[in-house]
Length: 446
Image (cartoon, rainbow, N blue to C red; front, side):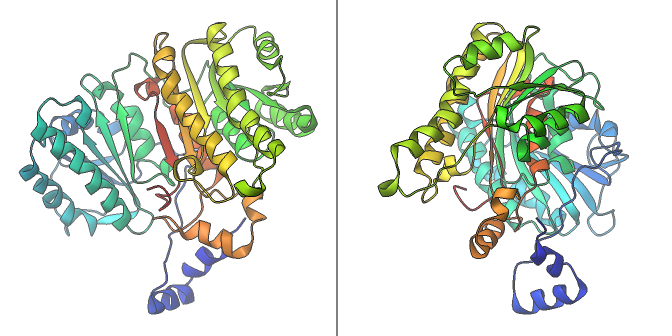
């Protein structure tokens, strides 16, 4: 559905009126387009310590123009080009007095950012540090990063990545996502990268040779996930209820995939799914989900039970069965579609929020178990995404949902799909048991 306010705010007349009365002016977000060759189309600035020098070693694979450290040319605010991407290594900040380095580096940078610029700060997870001073300082960086993300304009985003020792080999994959338009609707996020032996061998098709199962794939976000995984080289297996067979088969024909008709809540669903996947699967995306909204005082047992059954119990049972049977191959990837409602709650959605928070718990609880075979499990938590469902919302609620984020607009199904496709990559074995919000830095649960 078109966002008419963004269309107006970015017109010549709209820009004048919006500015005059002080209304928000959300930018048009740049998203990944077919045929694009580099993650960053513009200038990349690197700053900070040793991790920045590590990034400099592969910077030419990210962009044609890089500045800042090592043998790279210097960049001067006001004289150099506008910046499309920035990476600052703050991992060496070891006490609170050194936090001033953040202000000193970013203050001149902010006014030199291009439209839709992407910033990544690199740090160390405070929980991994024995030195109390370093722990305090690194934890302070999180507050800085989330606040600066809210100050960015013109579609800019910012993330903080905690990089564990020996995890620097996984930086390229993470930066290819977070510095590119693939992360257009992701901002203010904090993730930890751990050491991992898995690597992407072909960045043009990072999922080549891998089989991907997507539940609830017939339409909407599920269809977008399937399309994106297929674009990245995966062989897609599309699952939905028998009633959606027509849409499912049409999508499978277009993507060169195959279909499975299955009610995931059926008692024999795990065994039937294993039987339908005799060659195993590398990627499992639990996208299927429903809503049955009522305030708790009016919540019927049927509404409660159906939402918990589809959204939480089925993914839990199927994941356990696929892992135990070996159908989920070694070095597999499981991605759960949660929601910001599972993080912040939402009036009239106690059943839905419980199910989506439970999926985050599933990722946390199963992470160590899957890691014994090199597999990972993570959750993606979308915020307000423009779908057929949100198009049916009352106007006032829809507009409020769109504007209650740092980016001031709703996301697209592609935004969710891009995050899932990144977590499905071999190199994303560096991320396990975590949740990535795709919400434009929503103020809900921030």
